[in-house]
Image (cartoon, rainbow, N blue to C red):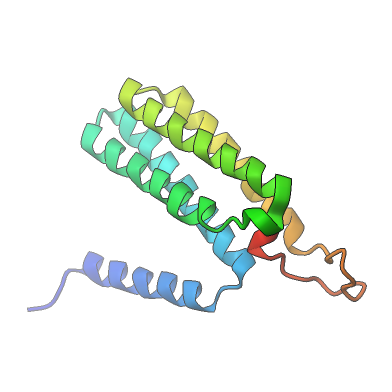
Length: 149
């Protein structure tokens, strides 16, 4: 008659995520993409160590999708110039490494991508409160645009 407690928790979490996405700034959306990719890579590491091949593959596929369809797609190479080009190449590298980790079942490759994502997320968070060089009021933080990635 009633759904399980877990299905209720999952539905509540989904609503929370969807609400967060619809009300998030562009900066926060990028942070959410980094968070999702990191969760997926961490999950893949856990499943790889446990020998759960199907679950590992699904987690790696999700991480690749977030990196390619989220982070890479958000780049504006015209406005972002060399920085955006460099990030695009780095995201492409991470996707290739994730495929290699999946094929070769190598945790160390997943950990490499995890470190890269963690460093990029930290850098993105660091610029979140930095006034833009184009005349933001002193002490008033601005939200960087996706193009500034």
